[in-house]
Length: 323
Image 1 (cartoon, one colour):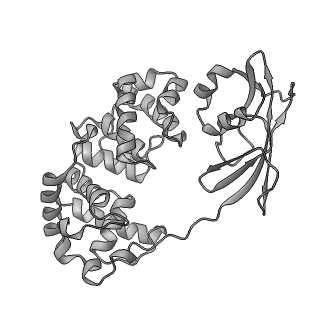
Image 2: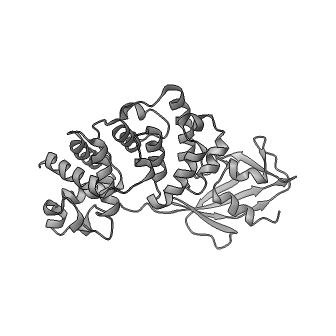
């Protein structure tokens, strides 16, 4: 394999075809980090307005670090997966105090910095010669090199990571990694593949062997779990009773209604509302009580509920309650 040639072809293509995105305007590690966190589980088109609004509210990492958590969550509302925002806030406090580390290994020590995010920030902002590996990159590399590997398993994922690292080893890792992600997002997509626009079309193994639609291999779907949640909704003087969640498998550690939960084999027929969080199918049966006895209860103003926990699940429950 001529990885150096592959790298040059990719960089040339990226420089001609990259989209003008707000986080590509400079090498500010804060902007790059914020964009990478927001782009997890979300599309570029959806992220841009949130990114611009968030930066307006918190222009620097110092501004983010000194902000109250509820303000951060409020600015994040709509993007979902709120643990990302909480980790962003925790990491900002460390970064504001000590500055941005310039290597992936050091960034990995911070809250919310997984292997992908730490490598993306280190390579794009600081030029460290490390490759990234996300869904787009897995798809591009699997097709380009014809790899029928179970990428969700540690050993196969490491094989792909080493391949990504080889492409960045020659330098220009910022363009290499953004090029791989751009290629996967705009040309080598899951369905509509535009091979004629690809810089690697002439020596792509998947194209040559008619494997484009078969690669990457499909990860076996995690079976959905059925949970029956009985939240206790207690409201007094426009305040609602909440506790730190230590009993439900979703929204762990966040403020939710007290109550009970059980896992079922079958979907219940009698419930007030239904909600999905990742692989959890949640069937809600509400208990409305005027008083609760749990000593860990915190009473929160109804108008501030979204600041305390912006999850749409809590709003869905409240809408079913006659306040």
